Image 1 (cartoon, rainbow, N blue to C red):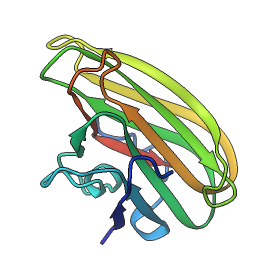
Image 2 (image 1 turned 30 degrees about the horizontal axis):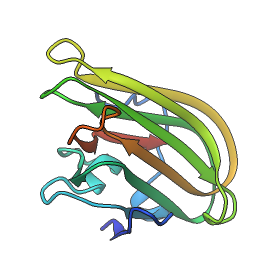
Image 3 (image 1 turned 180 degrees about the horizontal axis):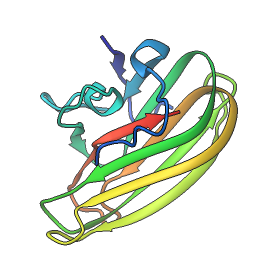
Image 4 (image 1 turned 90 degrees about the vertical axis):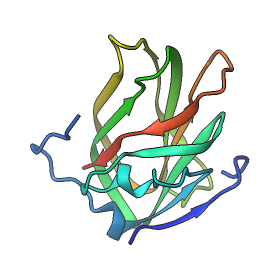
Length: 158
């Protein structure tokens, strides 16, 4: 069972089989700002499939992985999906070597969903990160300030 807790906002396609993915359920605790019933964060973080994670509230959301032991990361794979409405979202990935006391930005990415043509964003990054004790994904679901809710179909780390 994924270890998780809801945190305050102010606190800090199928995945390729070419990679060996970390067992996040076993290696990390997850903190989230909100979670819709029926769309738990573990369905986006584990390989068992599911509907993915959906925030229960609109606005900026955070998913934070706190590793029990420092990890080396060489690959990050993310999948986002929006089938209902046109919107531009932004996500930021950051990592920490000191348990989340300080973070370094890995990347900041914007993507415009435009259903029915563009409904799926797949991001695949090669990285060279050692001693990762925390990884944080922050999502702003609608840069225009609309009432969209953040979602994540899949996050895999290797």
